[in-house]
Each structure stands twice: as C-alpha cells, then as structure tokens.
Picture (cartoon, rainbow, N blue to C red):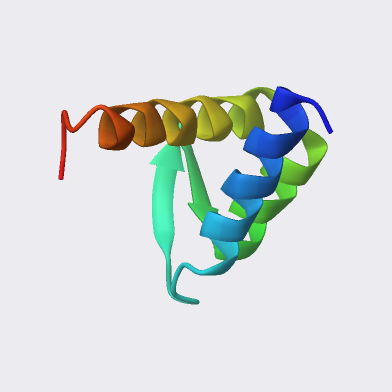
Length: 67
C-alpha cells in the first residue's frame, strides 16, 4: 500500500467516525457525512482536499504544533 492509499484509508476511517448529523462546506458545496465519504472514496477534487487537510492535521499533531 502506498502513501496515498494510506492517507485515503485514514481519511475514510476518520470520516466514518464523525457524527451522523455532520454538515460542512468545502468548495462552496454543503456536505453531510455520506457525501464526505463518497468524495473521499472517489478521490475527486473535494476528496483530495479532505485527504490533504487530514494529512496536514496529522503532521501538525505529530510535530506537537497542535495538541
């Protein structure tokens, strides 16, 4: 499994743990939990943005930039 697949796997796991009533907006599009997971699975522009944000969050967490 390459790094991109690992990031996708992590992003999907994090999304699946989110509450069912989740609502957010990315790129001007309102997303619920189901749509969020769909975009990650499809690896479209929104899905890639979500994965990039998750990766940056994990990097910051690992470097103790956030806690």
